[in-house]
Image (cartoon, rainbow, N blue to C red):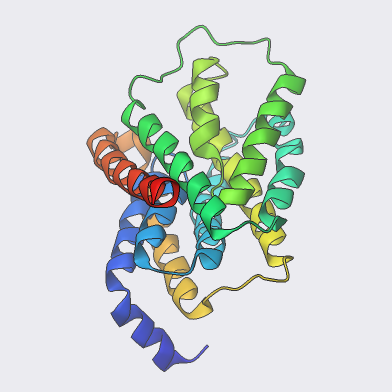
Length: 260
């Protein structure tokens, strides 16, 4: 990578870098990677669509890796309960990432995904697990949900936490903190599988000059956010503001690719 090209990339994309930094802090503080917001930002940036998925997934990996490391050190990960969720999601996320899709289909899927993410973020305060936890977890049912979410995640370029967490909350799967831990692991493994799937596609292409800067940016932001955590604040207002932005982007994308 040429340093001069990287410097020029920073100057030309400083607003994207700043937004990625903010998103990384916000999402990592509540156990997510930020894939939906990275996708929304990149969708408005003019970057060619074949690079959007890979860039978002790599940023996801960098952000949640710090979370998973901290959770593992704190012994908060229940691997036995999490494994059924990820066993099918990993190969299907790989398959979803490997599939070649047209620009129109990608943006239609992206638009609906972002719209769902926006609604979920707006209602996040209302989707809270009760004290009556479901101790009769069904591995096959969990595996099916995980597989479907993994496949969609690989195709679109997200980790899937924005789909998984609300389902787990509504099912009273576990405490909010353990659901956040589970979402982080789910995002990590699916983002890795989805990226490998995309990388194995002969048409894979990515701008490593810009991506390397974004990865460093979200790494720093993710480290800050994971240490702030929800023990210090609950970023409800910030999440609602982000939801409005994502909803605007999703509706704009859907209008362009469905009605024009």
